Image (cartoon, rainbow, N blue to C red; front, side, top):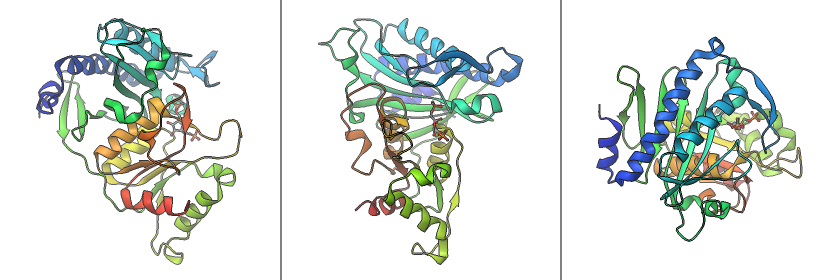
Length: 322
Ligand code: FBP
């Protein structure tokens, strides 16, 4: 099996971007080890602090965030970072060629129950006409990502990544400590009979999503004429990995639980990187209004509606919004 660097060179990835990717992955190996230690380490449970999202931070959230921030900012490749756990962007090297947005530990509610969690990252070119301390550098749409990926800390530690030449799947080989390429050019099946949504929010959804889901639940007795199965891992990395592996539709729709905050998932370090991976694997990644990666960001922590996965099923869902 091919090692990471030669696999990336085959996709003509610039050497400094390969070095930045290897820097990011070095931090994920450390996190993978800490996650595997579980309750043997003192990293389980919550801190007393809240992040800018108003969420109580898990100890491992903070550990992972510090690890990533330190290794990226001292790398020399990074002009600034933005993280789910940081109020605003953090300046790095004024001459750094890239900026990195990341969710150090996605699926935080799964940490203490030994369930699936992961790290999500998105890399853009750093504007040369802005100072490293200027958060406006991150106001670039998902179309301008040069790399996106996630690492899933599960029974095996897996990496799924794209640099714009397809979506590729790697596994961390603990014998030599490196990621090995196990499959190039993942393809999301166009058809599916599997959906992922947090059903407990059903009464808060907009009518189009209510109707779409009730027709799925009606199965072969309803207008869709076939039965659908439901899955919800409560960690986007886990649900999207299943979609990339065997198809499906994943959605976190708008809801009116809190009119101030109709959306849950964050554009810069959740929706955009996952959209790049899904589209590079032949799937669709949309809101009910258009492509996620066409959205011009206004804030590094902005939230968006997410409907992504198997092409024909996403189109079927969007049909309910017409
Ligand atoms: P964080 O854990 O990074 O805050 O991410 C949000 C998230 O956990 C997603 O990974 C997941 O898809 C969703 O929230 C789960 O939401 P819910 O708590 O409604 O099931």
